[in-house]
Length: 445
Image 1 (cartoon, rainbow, N blue to C red):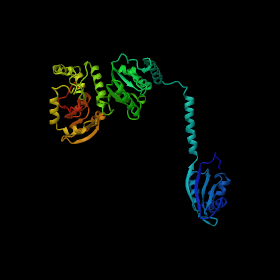
Image 2: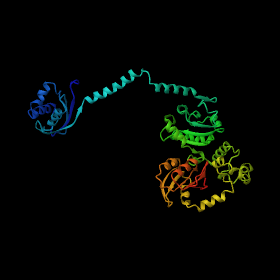
Image 3: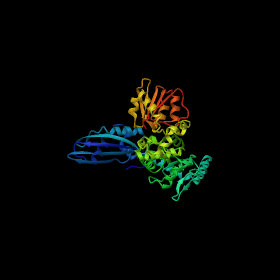
Image 4: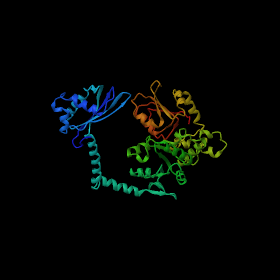
């Protein structure tokens, strides 16, 4: 169609005619009706003889007494001259005996395809010819550090389960999905992670979880949610952490890993979300209490009717109450319904609480509600995002009511933001409580 070495632009136009016309009619009309129209310098015949425009390509078809088609004209003129030449085509209003209309659709810069080819080839050259160059000092350091951490990965049990070197010696472990997750945590210096290898949790991992404080750290997808549900059924899990939505643990950078682990939630806070049955809740809470050093499990609400069983009630009987209050850290983690001395106080607080309406609305929702000085709702967020939302608060929040565990971190953030009242479903590990904050529990979990 044209000489690819000299062509810069291609004029693309459409043609319509009220009658039957053929290619020679169109070519003749173009040369004839543009002759002398835009000067001798842009005469089509002279330009074609000198090679500054190529052969006209005309494709036309006739149907039901009408004709339509396309016209392509290659040009090696500059863009201004090419534009003038294209505009001159639209002055043609008759081809042979037929009324016609020519419209310029676009002017294609054929050099753009050459630019793309240059870019692609440059990438190949850069990859092929510069890969063998020596890496920079930081790259050398990172490569050596990576190789050392890969060598640190060990296996556990007869199934050769991938794990970090500190799993057996550490009191707390992180349970992840696969080998790539363990490797990524090793990359950032976390050496107490062990993999479960998918939804089929190995028995060896389940047995190990009975002896350790366990954080389940899974991907932010449906698969990660299924693994947590299975872990809650077969293993004793203490905390749950998730990667950001749509991301896998093996894809996270150090900042995301640290943030996800800091935002872990106690397992009892996720029972409803992951649909854990009553019997399994009792078993998990009992195992968690035993890990905390209490020896005997607490008696949750579902088991209150079984008071005739002395083995479950002895640790929480009245004579033991002064001892448990002297040891606030482990006891506050799980609050027993069987402690008769505390029940009247909590029931009284719930009845007299000015936030009772919000407490009732939020029960079982795992949500948090921010209130102003008139106890009107300002915002509502999931409990898992409560810490982040409090940090971003603008100072007009006077009370926070939420269906979750009151932790030291929430108390500290609330104190920084000048919040006066903090109402949760349960009391967590509170070491220090600022005098400026009134803390109460709804006693509904």
